[in-house]
Length: 265
Image 1 (spheres, rainbow, N blue to C red):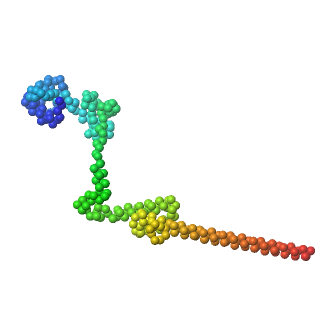
Image 2 (cartoon, helix red, strand yellow):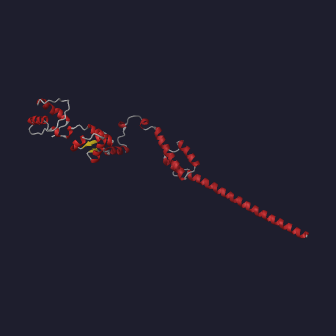
Image 3 (cartoon, rainbow, N blue to C red):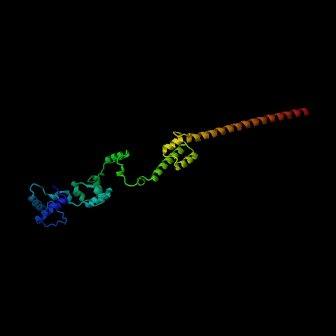
């Protein structure tokens, strides 16, 4: 079986000293699995626990792949902790000493980027739903004054932006003209409407005692247009009557002149 670094420090190194092997606990050594030192170590460890397999150097972790992991992280574009190296292909991976070779190993699937760790938000969603209906918002959960928790300036900016956005939308759709837009814009700035519904009701009549602002403006405009059309019609009628009268007078004058010329002859 393969032991971790902690197991090696806690169990293997004391047995190195007991076996009087020429190796220091803080000096890394690369020993091949079939070397004499490995065989002596396995024999000594097996003598302490005959029922366990202490072939510690057969594990893939004996090769230092830190450089390959660093190159793979640079090639893939992630951190080193997200790099997975195939433990069954340690020999081939250890021979890769260039980015081009690392790219080939990535394409072959020997080096893989670990998936992003997922953190469930189900508990957070449940908490947010509870807070929406007033749970977990008591005095014991509050830190800071009411103004610090939700500044009145922020509320004012949000409300005014909603009202102005509605006015721009109505002006773009042709429901109000630029003059009415200007008037309602300043009314909104003067805190005349507490929310969007109040502005809509003010413009559409609704629950307000006055008539609709839009309807009133449209009715005024229609009345002005009707008066203008009526005046234009009267002017046209008067002009036509004047022209007819002038034509009659001209015809009568010409007739009188014609009769005078005939009498003179």
